[in-house]
Length: 374
Image (cartoon, rainbow, N blue to C red; front, side, top):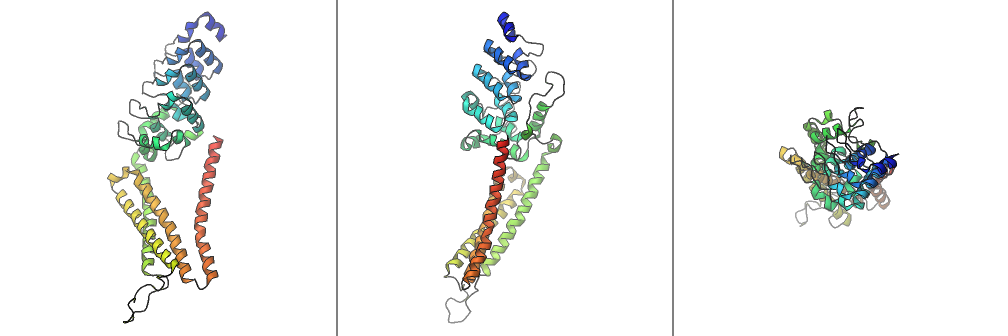
């Protein structure tokens, strides 16, 4: 039937209703693949027509619905439609960031240069597709961040919109205005022009309730609480390692008047002892560095520098590893005469690293499993 109608009157592809929707808009929104293909083959320029309400094209609708096949079909017939934006300045990639799975999004970016060029395009509010992605995948890693090499994306991930808010900031703290906007687009009211909503978010792309994020300070408080707990750990490591530096394994040489080395460490020539001193110093310096970073993070001005929190966390983790090395080498130095006991103690201490590796392996396996299910 569609083919017969198009044969009789090809201009039907460009006919618009009172909302400005063409037959292609309806075919895409209602997921009528065959009809959509027929309409595109009859008149590819229909893909360039925007509606009256939101200035959305059929490509925007397809991307918002998460219809990978339809998006590719439209771009194959009319590549220039990628440049068209809606009334908010959203391009096809803004919509795809909400509704596409990572593998489909990467395929789209890799296959079509016209889409790849849209990655860093801003809407009327200055939001790039990465701003949208950060809003829907807040505080959780998502493979869609890898659609372009990180070296390329990093600078743009820190680019700000007209409210001076970056995608990185949204990822860490949230952005209620954009989150609410996306939620409004996904609402299904069962009637009107968009009965199932403008965009369709799959199960892995649900954003938090807007009412929960309406006060941005709540999230800042959450980060502050995490910083406080990390500060306690870092301070504890600094205290222990500082004390260990003056309570050396093996003790000190006796204080006799004729001994030029009086008060020095007895095991100072021992290789294991030397390793203990070095690793203990590393643990103390890194933990104190973490304490300092957490201290300045308590100041409001520094809270926007998210990388400082990451630095502090990294310093604390490495300090923990250095403290384990200090324990193992220090124990070995004083138990060297009892070689068997020294080795057993070292093995027990080093199991810490095995547990850490095992934990990260399980986390990585779970992440890969979840991605494959997508």
